[in-house]
Length: 261
Image (cartoon, rainbow, N blue to C red):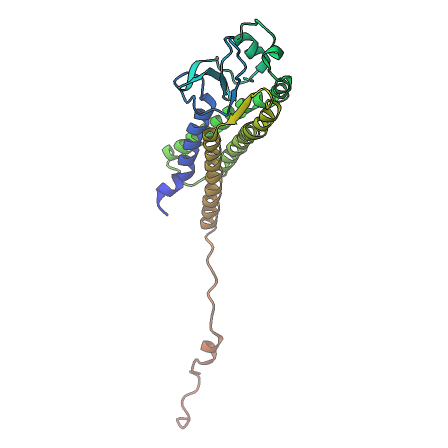
């Protein structure tokens, strides 16, 4: 087996590490992956206030803007690992606290939905940090073993990769639930006020691609570990003897007939 094949789990872990960071830091700046949102909330209830037309929500921040010739971002919030989108507070601040949200037609049920999902969204950023850190550790371990001239896969590498896969799976599941189930709730409760939401397909594709790569790396590492263990045992299959060969051997104690003294 070529040596480069054994580097596949490390290569996949590195790609998963990069994708995890891209998902985590999306939308933390105006010029950094603002189209890679978990979902976008549309709020056509401004009525002459400074309330923005839409808010794109990311794992650690949100960005808002106005609709015109496309979606024009006007700014992004500061980022925090424990970020959660407090709809009531943010909308009141953007409207200048000049009136109540109920007068603008904001459904209070949507505020309740955001509050119910607040703890879940806060944990999502934490799991992305854990997954990215574990993927980086897996890459560093392999480079360390290569420097020590040990090309065989180790069992603890498998444990590290699988732990990274588990952490990223949790983060991806949370993002998927928010993107699909929560968006459905917003669309249901905001129907009369024309408040809608739309999930980000690009974000879900990236997070699940990273999760799949860590799973593939774990499986490949397991295969390599089992192959190395089998080669170390030095197993040699038994040699089968043909019973007929033993009986067909000539009897050297007796000569041919007619040659006896």
